[in-house]
Image 1: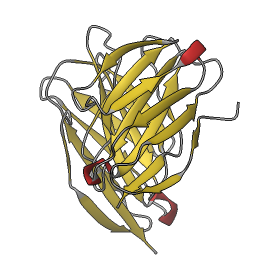
Image 2: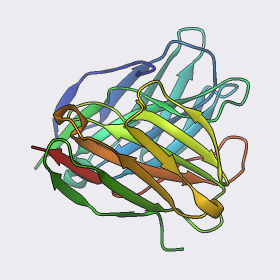
Image 3: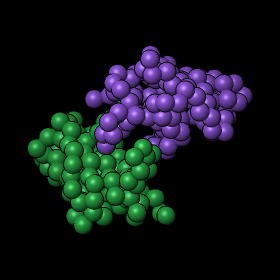
Image 4: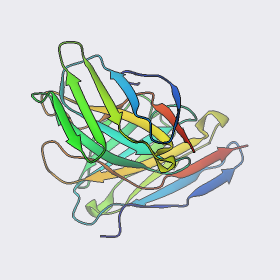
Length: 112
Length: 114
């Protein structure tokens, strides 16, 4: 079963604009990760944020985590057409469980 | 590091046939995962291996599904008596023993059951 929901389900923006995706989850976590998936391909890890962190940056990516609200957001700045993909959040359970549980994903389309 | 390799990439089969997928993880990764993904959904956990031991299985993994990882290297996922509802992308991922680790995914094996 999916751990949580992402919204929006789909997002269409112009190149150069920022894209924000949100993820909500249900149980206590050790960390939260974001992955990207191009159509018909495998997933690629983007960034990991631990439960005791509130914000993290990597290049054009900015991730926030609010454990009190059980939510996270992924911001992609200055988007490019090559950013077109599906983006998934995934949670690792607190207590050191072994599996990642993925959300439902946001489909991002960046138009020229 | 050649990444996670999955074969075959695509499989079309008739209902009732058996299919087997193979996953070769990154060589130094002890942990191996199988996920299933249907169109428009996120990956759903199926099973997890640490070395050759299968330590966790989802309730999604019915009796028709079996996974192995002999000698703790490559893994196989077999589906017996396939049903149309088994049509999905089957994703394999591996990671190292770090307490909080990212998963490295293969390109997936897409199954179509006619």
